[in-house]
Image (cartoon, rainbow, N blue to C red; front, side):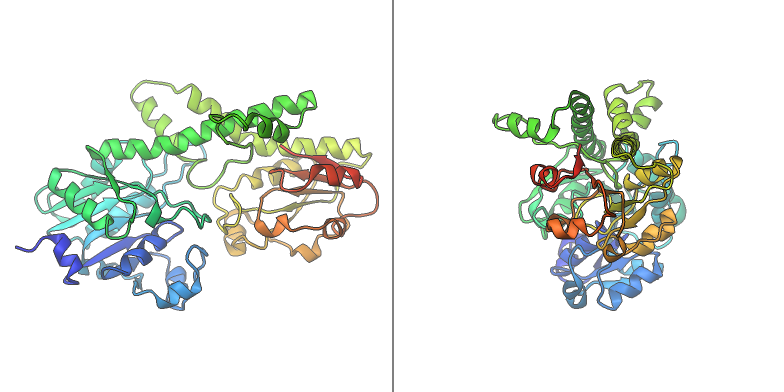
Length: 437
């Protein structure tokens, strides 16, 4: 009897990708170069864009989308044509920071209703250890009427794609893979090896793979929180944090982290999945949650420093003209989900300031839907008292002195360069009141 892997390679069955966002779509495109792929998403508008050859995520580009062999669909019945399924939907948190498993539960329901015998289901969504087997499997069984371990198998392979990063891609990042048994693990590993050129790491079980993913982003979150705390301390001392880090970075084993706003759907979210599970087991996290508190407060800290600089420059705070440049959660990526820049907006509003927001890279429709914000163009940013350069987009790095000057009203120019993108000395010599994390 032919194996599932051999059937995929022979084109006798298909692989499905459920969830075609910043992570799922590049995976679907990569696999479609090797085997038949069904790309499924419940968002019909998104599917329409893909079918028209448009890449709204800008992860692979319109040309690649136009030429890919992925069969894009919003019809769940098409999932029945596949026997290897990859679920790559978001796993956000609620306002109280508890895990929101709604997307992964919904995907499991849809897949379960269209699951055929002999299938393997691999989850990629970041979760706390136990979600795949304790939450998703029961849904798949209930909706399909099939028995896990008998009629279908499950695995877990955490996504490691870094949105907006053109250097670290699916093909050159080692992939963690796991399966519910040795046979499943072997199949999952071989399927991913079709597209992951640097190979895979076979985790001993699903919970290990789930835990590995959730600590990757928790570790990064804690390190950035340390940098943010240093920034707060050094600013009180009148010491430039970036200069300190550049000096310390000359030692071979100094870790190259920088202060900043920590948002997005991974680093700003994943630690809460781990601490939630720890609470369930009776342990209250100390280091992880301390880091989260620091990082969650950085938008407020930036806004407060904007207000302090307005006062220092002798400007009226209420109704001051402030523009924020950049709104995405990270540079060179259109994704605005869980953007901590919005924390700056909310805090400035508390002081009676309604800032302009401009971001030529961001998904404007998404920002309008999620935050009620309407962006202005860079050309509309004029006569401002202060500019907050919030995101280190590539096109912001090319600002000249003249292009910066054009944003301001006559008088003292205030610039908060959150990521230290521009030349501090040049701007201060030009008379700017300059501040950065």
